[in-house]
Length: 307
Image (cartoon, rainbow, N blue to C red):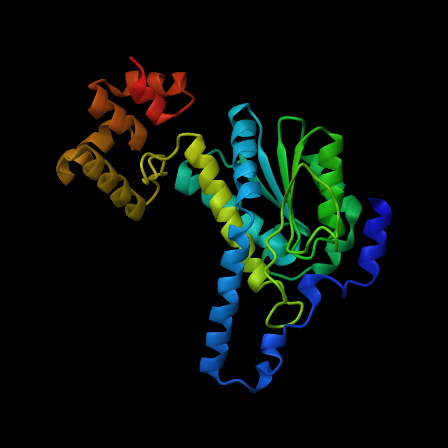
């Protein structure tokens, strides 16, 4: 593994993500409308490429949900665009699903300063990735999800190798085929989006594919953990007026009550949508509803099915 890694990082020209796209050879001569049309055609390829990886993506959902259900955590690890997208997905989970911020975390080469200021040289420090894993006391209950569009980022591989050494499950995302970078981890997701419109700029199709995959995985995990009922975010964190309105509408729509009654129910539940729904459907008070959810690890569907 190490020998392949060292050889591949010296000249990356053979990687699919580094090649020139024959469909954009005249990019500098296109009109604004032609550029938009070209991007639209190429972006469709990213969607199709993600679809080809549905087996691996579904496996990742099941693995992560099982880990979290058993006291584990999920860590996204990346550098540059890849790392920023991981941090973004992790940051969006608590307000959407009322999940503990420690449950899903993003690790970015260069730390949070790298979210807004480029620090690309730090991605070459393999040991830094390993240190980041050690600092978070990652163990065999956790899952580490490495994101690197071209597959070669030393920081990501340092993190994944350390995670594997500690017994954690490892997931690897890249946009190159195994014959170009045959590193083996527990699960590999490889949407082959093809050469970028701007050669080597993996913030484009590769970034789009990354966002699509992370959206699917984090949402799918939360569905399996019971934080969704139907297609409603019933664990929404009611922290501002927009989210309070959404919570009221969810309760109103699912219980077929008036907006006023839904608002009153939300208030009695302590602004917890799942509690409010259980109170209404089971005819119980907030403390009883809370106990029912604790007994089913927060899964509303299971709580409803209980006696």
